[in-house]
Length: 329
Image (cartoon, rainbow, N blue to C red):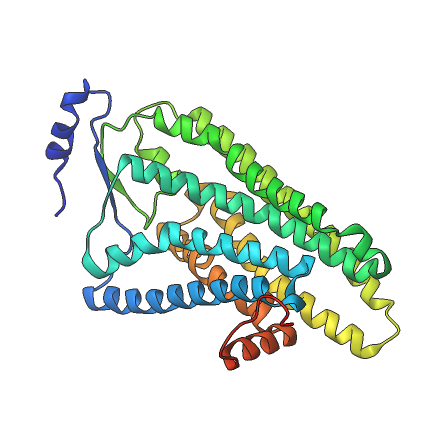
C-alpha cells in the first residue's frame, strides 16, 4: 500500500521534525505491465538461483578437491562467495517488488543496502586486481609462481581486499545516517543507489557527492588501470609462447575474463563515472541489472565451470556416493 506524502510527513512528527520520512518507496519497474513484471520476476528468480548454485558449487569443489586447492581457485572461490552476497543485496528485494508489489523499504534497511552494495563492489574490484596479478605471475613467471604465490601471501591479499572494501566505506554509512529526508520518498530505482537517494535528502549532500565521486573514480579507474597493465603484460608473454596450442588456450582464457571485466567495468563507468543527468532512468536501471544480476550469473561459467579440471572434479563429486576429504588408509 502506497503512502501519501501527508501520511509520510506525519510519521516523522514524533522525531522532532528531524526525519519526516520513515520509509522509502522503490519505484523499480513500476511502469511495466503486471504480467510482464511477474514474467521478469520468474526470469530473475531463475538467474538468482543459478547464481547461488553455481557459486556455492565452486566454493564446495575448491574445499574438497585437492586439484583445485591452488592460488587461482582460492581467489575464484572468494570471488564466488562475494558474488553470492553482492547479488543478494539487491536481487532479493527486487524479486519481492516484482512478485508482490511491496515496494517500501525502511531508512535503516535502505542505508544498509546502499552500504553493502558499494562495499562489496569495491571489494570485488580489489579481488579482480589480485586475480589479474595472479594470472600475470602464472603466465609470465611460471618458474617462480610457486615461490611468489605462497598460501600466506594469497591469504593476506584476500583479507586486505575484504578489510579495505568495508573499512574504507565506513565513512559512507556514518554520513548517510546523518542525512534527513523531509520531502518526497519515492526512489526511482529498484534499490537504494547513491544518486537517487542523495537527491531526496533535505540535508546538504555536497560532501557525500564529492566523497563518492572521488572514491568511486579512484577505485574503479585505478583498479581498471592495474588490471589492464597486467593483461597487457600477459598478452605480451602469450605472443612469445613457442607453442601455438598454448597461445590459443591462453588467449581463449583471457578473452573470457576480459568479457566479464567489460561488463562490470562498463556498467560502473556508465552508472557512476558520468554525470547522472546524462543517463536516463530506464538506461540506469537496465545497466544496473547487468551489474547486479547478469555479471554474478555469468561469473561461475566464465571463471570455473568451463574449465576441464573443474568439470572433472564436479563429475567425480556427483558420481561418488561419498566425497573423501582425507586420503583413505
